[in-house]
Length: 584
Image 1 (cartoon, one colour):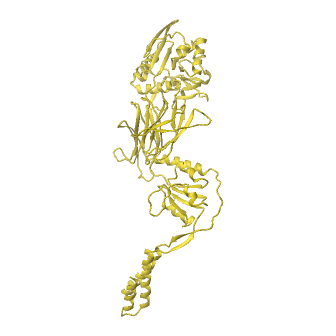
Image 2: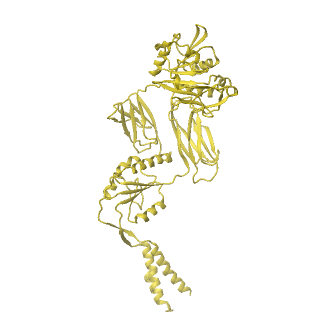
Image 3: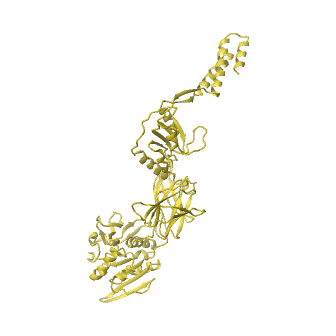
């Protein structure tokens, strides 16, 4: 093309600007050549720093670092993916071999997996994280709720990058929409609840959308392992007949608990009832009776009437963790025979404050509950509040005694909830108190996952307690795999095992009599909390003192192509001159 332009310029009859046309033809041809085949030049190679690109990196951040470190800075993409312009890095340890004097590595984007950080050795890590977008920032929920008990999921949703407006956060469980909450500004905290009815593994869904009928903005799974309800052996001690104990007896029996009731009728005369269990001698509290009891529920007069031997047997059962005590504080003073009496202090209420129902609340409560509050429990450091008023004044609290728990409540009339048809609130309240008082079961062994957001193709660390047998892993739809645990050198009953899941879904882990279910999330689920955990691990690693080698290698160079803009400018000058000269 250049030869043609020069020949045409030379043969034109008009000899004016002949040499200008010759020069313009040369410039146009040279410009096209530089566009297609830009020459290269040598620049010093940065041997102490390198760049690693991960998913979600910012091109602006990359350009800034290249200007700062120089165009010859080593650049890789991790994990290894097909990219025509960036070399792939299959292993971080390769960095130390390819660049022996490397002291710092800049990681752009989502960052490095926590399990891969040790491969950096003494290389200093500098992160340049990607900015988070719209979605669920975090969420917490009970991973192992009990059947029939309130279950709550709480968290935070952010609408960064979305149009302004309200957003609905909805909970889908057991195949239907169960709860929803509107965020008027499109971001903020949310709280949704549900009451599971069937035991087993389930995956609930949490989604966000601009309106109830609009398409989803984001959907995240909420895996739960629903446990069957625990039947308790409850002993009720009432000094006189009362509606409170009558309704409580019937409710507990209907829920499948074994109930024994001793009611005082007159001096020296009592009545006993047994539901869901065989009859027994309830005349006196002794070690034999308490060994078959999980929780003793009594009013103040019944505890005050205990003999010294009975009070000693009750205290011994508490100390050994055989039974718990739940006291209905229906008198101005607490009985002297109550274990840990000094940890609770009653503050009586009089007049309208005691006669008007007050709103009470407890952890996991999903409904508004009101009840008469004749007394409050003054807060002490020894007792833990279980139920409070809206002013955070305790009306029920628990105190540990040895291995058992003593619970005191000032709500002595909760049966009106049942009369009002509010069985859900009634059951949730008594479940809160009985669960706090019931002794903890001695597990045969436990298996817990140390990673909060396990993912495929990433190490999952399992901690075993109370069992050192081989760990058997059953992935979804796969064959069982045996993993050898490593016993702790200091605590023989502890061991750890590492398993690399290859697929998402429920995984069953068993070792001896211990069994646990762990849900492995897909790579696109709960990205923001996972990245926050990953970035926290990177920050902790970067904060560690390192012994960086100060060795300096001879300066090296690398070939860098000239910018193609030079060719474009030359072609534009030459072609523009030829066009303008011909028009004039």
